Picture 1 (cartoon, helix red, strand yellow):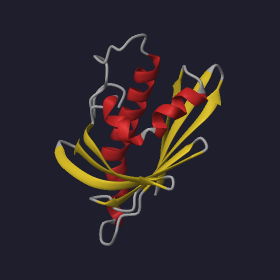
Picture 2: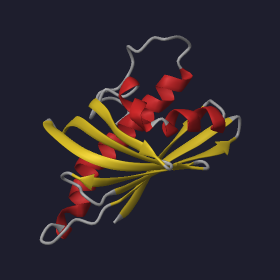
Picture 3: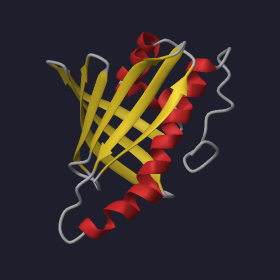
Length: 156
C-alpha cells in the first residue's frame, strides 16, 4: 500500500529541504524520536538506529537513508516494519513550500490484511506529527520548542 501526507510550510524549499535532509537530527524537532544513532555514512548512504514510542510501545529499528535532489528516501532494514519505504519531497508552493511524506508498506505474510489498519492507526499519526513539527520548527520566530507536538497529539 502507498499513502502520503502533506503540509504547507511558510519557508523556501531549499531551507525546508536542508532540514528534512538531516535525517539524523529529526529528534531535535520531533519528540516522537526518543533517540537516533548514526551507524554509518558513506557514498550518499546514511544508516541510522532509531528508538521511539509507537502507539505507546517502545520500538527500535534500523533505517538506511539516501539524500538526493529535493528527495530523501528512507527504508527500514531491520525492525517491526522491515521493508517500509518512506520518501520526503519538498516542492515550492506559492511563497513557501509543500512537504510530502509518502510511505510504501508491504507487510509480510500473514499480516498483509493489516496494512491499512497499521497505516491509519500508527504511520499516519507519526507522519502528521513529524510534518507538523517540521512546520513549527521552521516557522517559529525564536528557539521556543514548547509547541513541538507529541505523537498522537495536536496536528496529528
